[in-house]
Length: 301
Image (cartoon, rainbow, N blue to C red; front, side, top):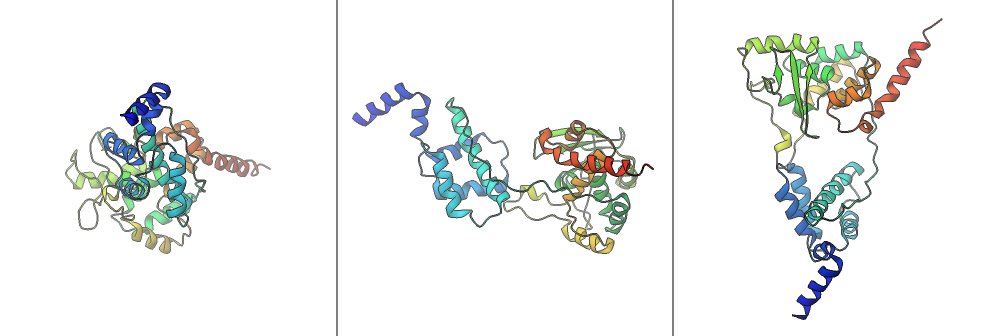
């Protein structure tokens, strides 16, 4: 009874914070998973590891709990991987805090270099696209001229929710940021997709892109243990054929954004077409435009 009276006294004196302090990190993870509509399978694995290590610790000092886990388990991880653990931990804590009307917790992000910008010349672009296997070339053409992430492209359906050949538009479901944008179809992409659409009977549903066995590509985002890129080997082979070095599949997204800047498209439009959530995430491409203008001005006699 004395312990119960003490808890009630703390709740009256300190409000929701006292209730939260009585919970554990595991309670926060449970709240987060209950609220999430479709949590990433990789994040579920991260939560499992976090919960096993620090789930029984009190919510009084979540930052100390995080540092305990990070120092014991993540010191050998790449900074980007560490920050993903931090992000899901912070999201879980803040879900619990929100339920109890408390201000959100902010844990300092793990700094890592996410500023890579790699793009090809138009000549190298066309040579590399031609070096892919025929069934992969339409996929790469979409990456080069619309800039989606690889799984967004591979899982693209026919119809108004994907590739709409009748309206000559593409609805890009940027699921990573929960952003959906419908954009006009680039002529090069239409040229590649029209024969596929005709061959498949002008259908308005089903996957646009199929592998060499005529089956849809696996959506690795839904795997319990996320796999690699389904066309990684084809990309590696194409780069060797085209003699292109240091160019990843994701670099096609950088290539698209960089060429948008060089074509004079403003960063706000690029942000919306590419599905980025903030202007800060596309500002890395601004310097590409400056370099391009410098090269152009230097051509004047």
